[in-house]
Length: 287
Image (cartoon, rainbow, N blue to C red; front, top):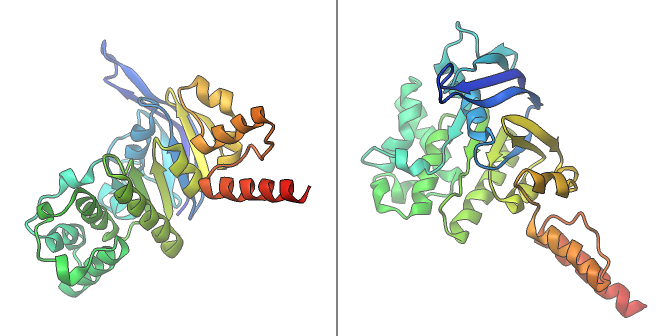
C-alpha cells in the first residue's frame, strides 16, 4: 500500500504565543512493502508525521494519499483509514485495559464487526506473530506479564487488525536488551512474512542500519536526508550537525584506519565487521 505525502505542514497552537511548526512542507513517497526507518532528534517531527498517517492529527495544509485515496479529505472515514494503518505508540502496554490478554487483543477485531470465529482466528494469529502461546496465556491478565510480554500483547492488538501499513514509534523503548532484540526480530519476521509496509521510528542507529530498506531523516520538521542505510550513514558530518550519529561499529571501522588497519568504512553491523576483520586477518596471514 503506497504512501504519497505532498507539501505537508502541521502547526501546533496556531496564531498563539506558543505556535510551533512541527512539519514544514514535507513531501515524500513510501513504496508498497518498504521497510522504512524514520530517525531524527527529539522535536524533529517524527511522531507528528506518523500520527498524520494514521489520521490522529489533521494537517494544517498538504495532502496524504494512501493507496490512491486522500485521507486528509473531509469525506474520508478515519475508522476505515485506521483499519489499514496500524500505529504502535511508545510504551503501548500503558494502553492495555482489558481483564484478559484475549479480550485486549480482540478489542479491535470485535469493533470491526467480525464474527466470534474470525475474532479468535485474528487473536491466535497475532499472538503467534509475537510469540505468545495462545492456550497458555489467553485467559491471563496482561498485568501479570513481564514488561516485554506486555509490549508484545499491545503490538498483537494492532496486528490483529491486519493493517497494511504498520507504524512503530520506538517499540523497544524501556526494554532490556533481550526483550528489545526479541521484539525487533519479530518485527523483521512479520515484515518478511506479510510483505506489508513498515515504518519504524527509532533512536538506535544500529537497529535502523540492520533492519530497514530505506531511511528518512527528519530535522526541524523537514526531510533532511533519505536513502539506503549506506547512503545515509556516509553523510557523517551532516548527521552530526543535526544531532545524530552513525552506528558505533561504523565509527570503529573508521578509527581503525589510524592504526593502519584499512577496512571498508561503510560497515553498518557487527556481522559485517566480523566478516571484514576476518578477511583482513586472513590476508595478513597469506602476505
